[in-house]
Length: 318
Image (cartoon, rainbow, N blue to C red):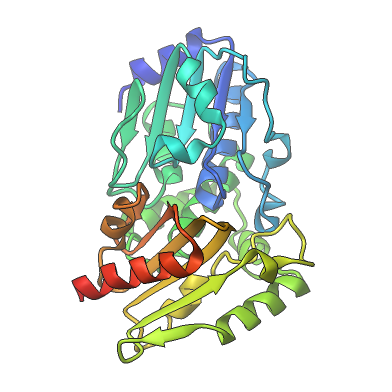
């Protein structure tokens, strides 16, 4: 990683924006908030944070996340826009206008499908998370890591490794997590906040959705469909589908699982998980991407048509 590129760019910048991706998860939010605080501690500069979608209930306790905004004056011109955990430009949402106008852009990511779309690209597909990349950068280049910054990085790494149980959990990942604990992070407190504090509506909705799951190919493929009408009456501040597809993957017979969520009558959001199949390659065909066993995309078709497309692509590969 180039200290000169990153440090000098931030040092010379007056207006800085850090952006997370649409439908934000723990990695993009944790990385954004960690970088925000680290820039403040290192250079005494106040960066703006942009969150294209509403804050998921799960991350309500993340330090500094309440300072992130989901609306900005689109005429603003930033000296630097920094994208964290954003595999493709269209995952920025409306922030893409600010990105395209910026004097300099920085892309910090760990997805293997990331094409390197910024002026400065720090991409490590071997890293468990964008938070892991930031931690290593901070350590290698003498950036301060406060307790709050450490907690943000820990949330990033914890969530993108599925609580340290996914294939991307390496010995280095665990050593870094241990280092963050030494900086003051309380693992029990963070775990309970992220994984063990759900609203009644969330639990009840997910229970019903799992009961509606469909199976095929001798139960080796499982999927759930969620229509907008299914979410009527529930809080709009929560992503009730988060974690659903992971539940299907835990079934012993299931090799590939996916969820198709209706955005509108002609657009669907797909989340895919697998045990052996490269689902990032499937999602890339629709302009999406991610990791080998966990990926997503947006498909320009109805829920039913999208289900057929995804099923056909999976069956071709198993």
